[in-house]
Length: 231
Image (cartoon, rainbow, N blue to C red; front, side, top):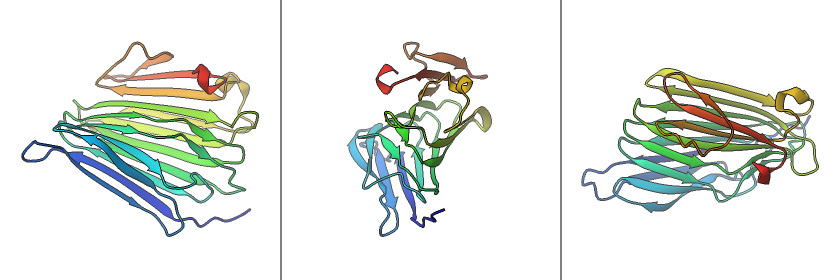
């Protein structure tokens, strides 16, 4: 087994109202080691109550030993839209492993839309992907994720995917997916693309897939496909 020592990276996006109400305050930060690519937040636009931020990787991600951490904080009454210029590939880690940790906190009346691009678990990768979501009772969230198991014509990598969402301190969703080489066919029906849309405080019936109505509000929509373009 090869041991990797790439440093941890930390990306922070914080959006909050200002006292004069003219424009929201967007605070961003990206930290990593000298040879460690980071995910740098780039402000696309901002207004009195909303902002759009692009999460731009500055190098090859995800490799063995990577420890990526993204913290998103949305202030009261503010709307944040996160976009990604491209998808992410977890490459062959040659016996190593990587972590991708997301922490989301949305205050009262705040809203977050994060339409994530595909996350590809290439052959030989081993990734633990975890999201912890905390929402005020009247906060809104629209989170889209797409997991692709293996690039075209190759076996999938290992993916441990865990999402936990709490509204007003009460757990509303604890969802875990553990897939990879050797996953029984009956788990995903032989499909290799998993699409998920999680909505709190909003609902779009046009989002296709199997709908899971969460107790006390919220909807998880999930669909499976053989190829990305079919999703």
